[in-house]
Length: 207
Ligand SMILES: Cc1cc2nc3c(=O)[nH]c(=O)nc-3n(C[C@H](O)[C@H](O)[C@H](O)COP(=O)(O)O)c2cc1C
Image: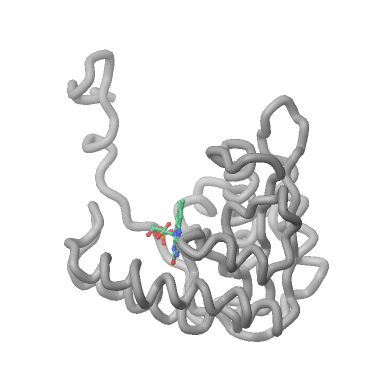
């Protein structure tokens, strides 16, 4: 299925899918998503990433409580008091916040989480996030919804303890994965001209 999908169309429609069905994700699909993650660029090809797959409802409930707490107490109020993101309307931004709140309150109900990890001191995640993006694209190509989430890191230690990570291991995201309740659609972004310069900082890209 994945190789019949146009890559650019896949990228254009890989949105955060925050409303998920509770139906299990077949292991054959989950494996494809994880394998796509391991195709990613990574420093020196050391492949120092580790991916924890969590399906256990008790672990998701325990760790998910810290995601919800971070959303309810910090991140939700912060977004609600600010303006819409570039390239979005107040209405579409409000819909995104509604979906983000839904995810926060149903985080533990996603049938599976993928938790990208790396040992050693917490770094930039530069050798982990390319794998995450590959997995988001693979999920989209397979009809699965996913969201890159990090806001639980406000309660990093508690959430990582709830997920049973060893002391020297850090998580860089939690990606809740499942079949989406809604339809995939195009991402909303500001125009290229607003973010690309040519030769001189601030000078418009001409192509
Ligand atoms: C580093 C990073 C952290 C993010 N953390 C969260 C998060 O904790 N919760 C969430 O709902 N979305 C999170 N997102 C998803 C962004 O909100 C989303 O990509 C952005 O709003 C654009 O929307 P789209 O992915 O639907 O195009 C994160 C994205 C990135 C790149």
